[in-house]
Image (cartoon, rainbow, N blue to C red; front, top):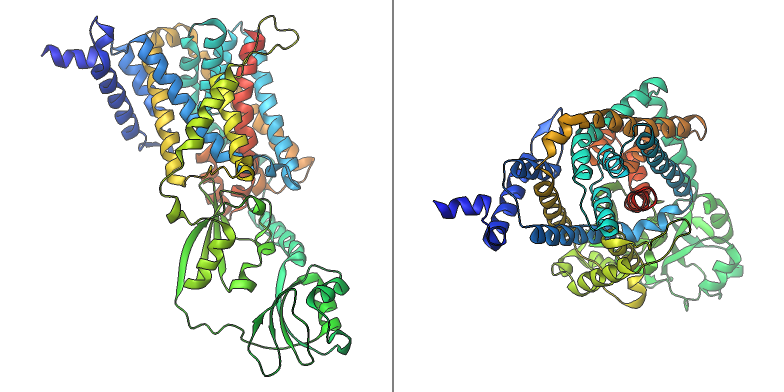
Length: 558
């Protein structure tokens, strides 16, 4: 039975070696993933159960060799952080456009206010800044922040501080549930009526639809346009008009191209902004009823990945897919969240668009948007591992900040994250294939975070109970303050000062807390996709700021 005991508890030779390390990591991760399916009050703690299982195992003497523990923890963190960067990178810069700028500034206020409150608590309660950062990471349920804090402290001191993981584990449960409590409380104090919010959304969309496209079939009656080419006609109209088909008298419908010359009696298929329809009709001729494409083909539905960088930031309406190919766009999936296919929705590289139409038409749309998911089953590993290597290099470069006596580094969290964001956003311009399927990215991300959490738990469990009973229980109260106050302050300001729709506020607060259960609650309560849009708008910047702020707090105040 000695061999079995060695698998669980190791031995004096290299801590039990590779078999012990692999067995313990697999056991902790496996049990943690099973427990992740358990819901408490309708809320699941997800893979964070791995951390709790690792703490329990370590408390009872099941630990790993320090060198193995350090390597696997840091490598898991790099995999996780880099995968997150690849996910949020394409939307990182475009999220600042138009209304997204205001939402991101409010999310920035939530992050800054949370950090400030954590620092005040550290000073008032004489709490080590490492513990305060752990409380902050748990209060906002942000595991990358935990990893960044641990890695920054290790880089700076060469040591590990178990209080970071312990305070994170203690405050995490209420951090997950606290956002939902804030959303419910805000609805009460702001006297929100969902009927009014829905009416406001409908009215806003009606205004937006003035720029929405409309498909027109017109018969040419303006004799002054006979003999003119389509580019010249477009210039005369002075509005955003797209010619799709032309039917010359006695002929068959032809694609409208730049060399097409109008003839008397032509019929035109056009896409015109709703606000310009009256002008276009009066200038060209009479609107007629026509069936340009007989619907005799079997319809298919396919999810197509947008991979062409020139499509970044363009709206569904601007692509003219319906008028050109006769297809319908039913929804867009962004970062795992389904969004309604509103014509004004701005697309991002990496979005997955569900297209319904004739088989050949859908194939043609694939050429416009980029690669179909079926062609990306095998991920391109070169930018992943080369990117990680560059991230480690960047994270290892020392630089000096006035007021800090020692060199500062981005570390193994900040370096790979920054490289991943830049590679995923600008890589296509240099013909670097950075795209992976959602499942491949999720596998990388979940594997990395599972390894990281297992090692953190196995390294922190030895004195966990003594630490908590010795005064660590007050961390729960600190965590509640850090969770609730920033969300309440910004939520009230967003409503009273900026008159933002409550559905958008729900998505803003859920995204600023990087809290998927809160988003699920918001979507279910709202009954529409407005919270999802707010969530995905602020999520990329918030995730980046959480990781960066953890490192800065450790470096400045340790």
